[in-house]
Structure formats: C-alpha cells, structure tokens
Length: 335
Image (cartoon, rainbow, N blue to C red):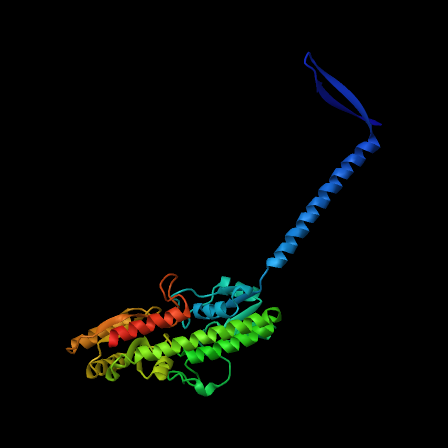
C-alpha cells in the first residue's frame, strides 16, 4: 500500500499541488534512518559529556575547620575539591554536625580532621566512617606526643591548639602531606613539592614572630584571653598565657578565676587583655569590669583569631594571615 504525500509548488500565476506516491516500505525505512541518526547523535553527545566530566572530576576532600582547609589548599591545592564543614568564626569545640555535614562526609573520597578532641562531637562519626573503609586522616596523629601539652581541665587528653606553634603546624602539614601522597598517587610528586614549599613559609613566619614578641617588655609578656588556646604560642615565644576558660570553650569559669586573673593583671600592670573571634565578648568584658572595680584600668587590646580563621578579606582568612594579625595585635596591645 503506497503512502500519498502532498507537496505544494508555487507559481507566479497560481499555486498547484503535486501528489507523490511513496511505497510503504520506503516510508518506514526513511523514518527508521532518521531515528537511527538521531540516536547516534544523542549517544555521541552523552559520551562526550561523560568523558569531559571524568576529565574534570576531582577527588572530594572534606575537612572540619577553615584552618585545616587552608593547610590543604597549600598542600594539595587545585588537584582536589576542598570542602570545609565550618566557616569563619565557628567554634569547633561546640560545633554540632548537621544532616548536610553527614552527607558530605559520607560522600567524600577523603576526610581530614584535626583530632586531639578539637572536634569532640564529630569524632565518633569520623571513627565509624574510618572503620567502614573511608580514607580518614587525623592530622595531629604524627607521633611525638611528648611535644603535646596536657589539657589541664581533661584527664588523659592533650591541648589540641597546635597551630599556635608554626613548628608543630609544620609537623601536621608533613603528616597530612605524606598521607595524601599515598591516597592520591597520581599527584604524589606535586603534593610533596607543595608541602616543602609550605614548610618554608611556616619557618619564615616563626622567625618573624620571634622578632616581634621581643619588642614587648619582659614583664608585660603576659597574654590574657577568653580561653586557654594560646599555650603553644606562649611556650614557643616565651610568654605567660592565661585564659578565663580552659582548653575547651565548653569549660566553665567562676568568680575565683576572675579574681585570680584580675590580681595578675593588676600586679603586672598589664596594658591590655584580648577577645577571641569565636568566643563571646562578654567573658573578657566581665574581666575588664572586675579589674576596673579594683582601681586599675586595662584596655581590650583587640580581637584574636583562635579556633577559626577570619572572614574573607579580613587579612586573617589564611593561616599565615591569622598568625600575623594575632602577633601584630598582641604586640600592639602590650608593648
């Protein structure tokens, strides 16, 4: 049975219609050919898209803090997609994971966290993921525990704030770099080179910090902050460090702590005490009021970044920038 197809032809004088007969078999062959060519085109486009996606796909590395994200940026950089869970100003001691965080951790190729109970509420989840075969790197587990300070308000625990000593942060960087080089063998050479370069920068900022702290009179080298985060800084650079709270911001403080610290500020005639970006201002403000009530004026010398980096554009949005900001603020307040 033929298929009749009508086609219009146009003439200057008038329009006429031509009628063509197409065999049924030929008609379906034409339709089949068109469908085949369309299918081939779609498949080619799909394969091209998949190949481009695979070529551009990067391993996903989820980390906990912004400080850790900055370390990863320096070590592994553009070879992976870095996804920090905590943004600027977020206190890792008190951080509670969200459902989105759990999904990110579950889908990650690699997880990097600080350890030493810094991310206390996250660590049980990370332990479970590691037990299931996920690549989970505890950055602070590089051995040499003799270098760690005990967390005085917790039994059998260490102070996690290693980044306040650039030499210790260098050991963290070496540990993370070596483990990432194993986990990402394709990028191993680049990771090792980037790690060496970053260690040089840490050495430079360490030397610079020593020079700056030396500008503070010896009797005034006392750093008073909201919580006891700067002990590694104090040990490295020869400063006494006191915090209203303990190593963790979850620790409480009482009237006795305020009285003792007030006495020290008055006895040493300190010019300034310091707030922290991730701790409520009321803690240090209450100490300032207590000192004033005893007849001594002490200024709030500025805000230090302790457990979190600063927001973008603050100058403290990288680890090295944070160190320089803190040192400039401390020296400016106490010298």
